[in-house]
Length: 295
Image (cartoon, rainbow, N blue to C red; front, side, top):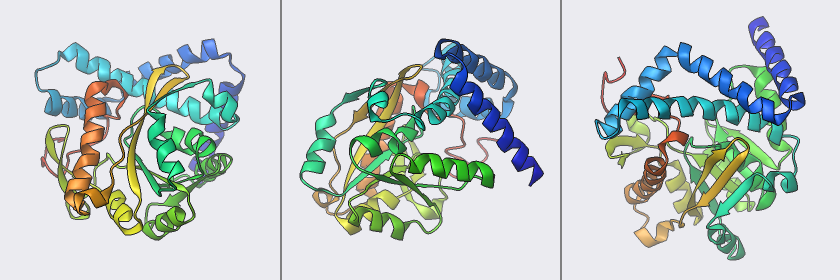
């Protein structure tokens, strides 16, 4: 309990620094912190290298792989900064940081009053679903595991609710997501991470067998929603491109759960391979498929 509170206080101090330090200085402070963590975090660097070796083998150099890993750390610190800053920004200020590609895809779905599930990966700044998307288009509902630190968890909840976004506990979230869609909220799901073999569909992800959650697929089938892949690509510090991809309508694929889940995996794979620097390579994505790969 005391440890959690001390971590919360440290976060509050960091948050205060973020809000008062000039942005031109903050960028380089974040880069310094990211480089420091990159140097000392052997475990996650190792996981990242294993993932990159699996996906790319020898088609890219060791130097390029290390560059991608380092950029993953930069991205994490930039995301933390954005979470803090964006809490105090309205739509007008957020739009100064955003370029949009294929906006007609979501505008068309909204105009036709379709129920919308946005799927993404832990890629770039995926948290923009809870800020920009909810202010620009429609209130959003997302799913996540509560933080172990109750103080940080409450702070995160309050910050998200400022932007008309709500977060459901991952456990037993299906009913809440269905209700959100029926209430004309946009549902946002990050579906790229590891799930146990008995809780998803076996698909190809980045060219390799993987198990992917089928929750977005099954909820879309049940509610008649369309699935729109979206990615938040980091262009620079405080600059992002939001890229909407063509919608996936389950009814066009005979509600085939595996096929629809694979189409979502394909959208994520294509974006990650196009710009791998923005993906979260640090996690053990294939630990249940390639047993022992991370040992």
